[in-house]
Image (cartoon, rainbow, N blue to C red; front, top):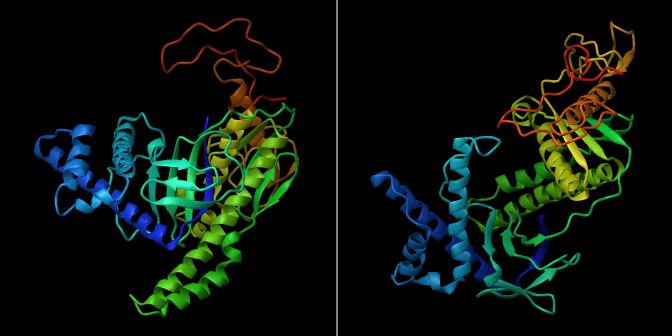
Length: 414
């Protein structure tokens, strides 16, 4: 499997100028290629081949007086920008045809030099690692790297990034072997929220760190200082950097916390079950700032990545599961409960539930049921499949044995 290892770069002033030139040339080649493809499609709905496009916007462009300075940067970086354009078009067509999951992607758009984040990628021909630990980039030189750990294998490519705060990073793509952890018996369901970040089905509670809320005063003062500076002045540029660095500290702290929390959950549990939350919809409510600060999507992505590498399982149950209305003891479904109702009593069995703890236990049971009833898996605990199931038509599932359920939810009744 392929992973990214990111390290901080410390380029010299001259190397910063060379990187800025490389960023600009790669962006220009990308925009020129996009304009050529758009013009060709509007003319006769044709598509220019990759080789002909590269010859037109790179090789032939270098021979003109308007684009002669493209020869000052590495051609490998320019070729990578064309591959990025091909990938953007491929993702668009895959999204339109339904082959790509998730939200529908739009057509590629032109890049702006005013973007706060700049990036350029080098393939194997455009970089090398020196024996002294420096990163050699074509036509840029040996750049100092803050190595925090060793790379597990030789990288296949490196992406050099500059963020809004002016920091430089090198992101290496490395092929690594999965580090399967020894199996454990524990499984846990997680109910994500805002009052508490997560309530686990075993009773543990993970507090919400609220990184953005805690830094709001410092961010507000930095933004007020920026708003008072004259546009275009050097002092405004310095104030903008201070605002960007304050936001970067918040983002770094949130990302680090997500990785540490996800690692602990994956290490202690064989399977982790979450609810498929509609984060984009929640981000349009009055709780938008708190929802963005919680970064549930980042937490889920990190959890899934670590589980794939460690040989663990992460299950996601449907967002339409009435986890806050269903009793985790008798599986009776009650009515809707406002958010201020934190405890409730089941009308079926009389059990008094904590809202979040009960929801996490319902998510655990639903995730285990879906995993057991998946194609190729036992349909109920203790039942094994004696032989390989016969092939079925695409889009269908093997016929499963009936499972006793409660309230038509698919959750086995104990």
